[in-house]
Length: 256
Image (cartoon, rainbow, N blue to C red; front, side, top):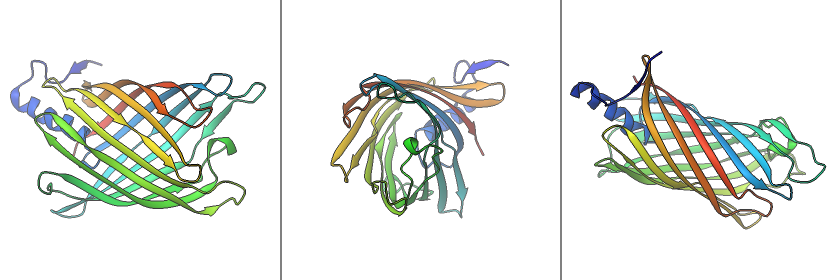
């Protein structure tokens, strides 16, 4: 199948359509069905410098409620292989805990800002005790962003509290903050910077990875996809946490 770089030598109307697609990719609450397969490698964990691989399957499915409102579901399903961070320990593989967010978002920006909000849920779906918290959780989530002249900047946030689950496991009380900024060129290459920071109120501990990435919108035959490559360094982390990581993402797009 032919792999085409969108925007290179294409008719102007077609390029404009793909430009709109590239713009929507930077918007977490865009009216666009997408299925990112996000591969993450984290290195330097524990006394063994363990590696942890996480494949996040992250379908985003929007629904048009009417001419004024969209409803968007965003699901993160982690599939994990974690090397043991201690000598003599066993590696663990399986499904982690699923996080699912629901956003109600106005179709038109408010004063130039795109906004959305709703509930977020934590499901104790892990197949190994070490890969999840064995807790049910819920809380609020929100996103606000602006797009102008190729730039996208804003913040995604949520907070999760556990309300049920195994008593022997620690409660969940965590705030997630993801400020982000990106720039998309006329050939639909996107350069991005963000943090995906979590504050654990139970342990009074930050986890702060700084991520940089470059992405390209392509076409595989008739199917538009985006490929992304990035790296990260941890400014703060729990004791025994990773030092640095890599990320590779393949996102399948299904424009309406």
